[in-house]
Amino acid sequence: DAGVIQSPRHEVTEMGQEVTLRCKPISGHDYLFWYRQTMMRGLELLIYFNNNVPIDDSGMPEDRFSAKMPNASFSTLKIQPSEPRDSAVYFCASSLGGIGFTDTQYFGPGTRLTVL
Amino acid sequence: GENVEQHPSTLSVQEGDSAVIKCTYSDSASNYFPWYKQELGKGPQLIIDIRSNVGEKKDQRIAVTLNKTAKHFSLHITETQPEDSAVYFCAASNNDMRFGAGTRLTVKP
Image (tube, rainbow over all chains, first blue to last red; front, side, top):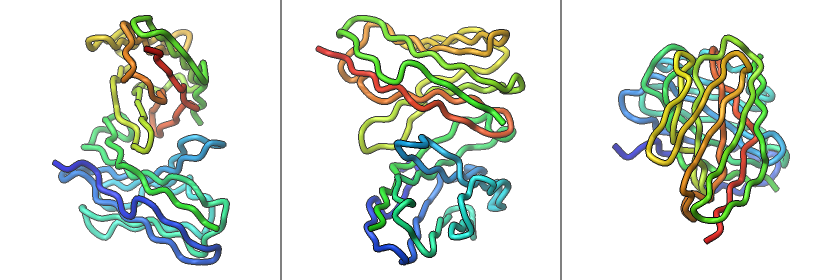
């Protein structure tokens, strides 16, 4: 398997623009997670899905952030409008199953977002 | 919610020496403790994990110990090599996953 795939790898945009990050989880994995990594706050869970259904989005910082998983092989994280403080590396991860967070999570390579 | 503290934030060792990274957690219900290694420009990769019904686990040069009573767990890397240089994250989970702040390990040749 190719592992978790994320695109784009780098995104530079201007404040106020819409940003869409994409993720393809490992085939057969039931859980998908979106994380944000910054120097100040470390790794933060934004939202996670189980069988394409959003389970917990309490980590989403604001209404400007939204995530969807229309099918088992694709998810998007959208920021609209983007702000400079959204600059971070965004990771997608997937896991096979288990109860909640007790199974191995496999991370993608991340998308480095810079909002000018 | 869970709170995970990780120490030290940076660690420099000579090649061949051992490295130890320690984490504490707050939620006694946490039952899964993975360790991730993150190299520059890459996503975190699981290197070893331990569940609450086990006190110690070893995989070649890497070992993890868990003390549930004290709510702390540690990563031990023996015979370190330059390719072990990376940022290491601990995590604790029950109904959610919380990561430590990370330890930047440098192994000097």
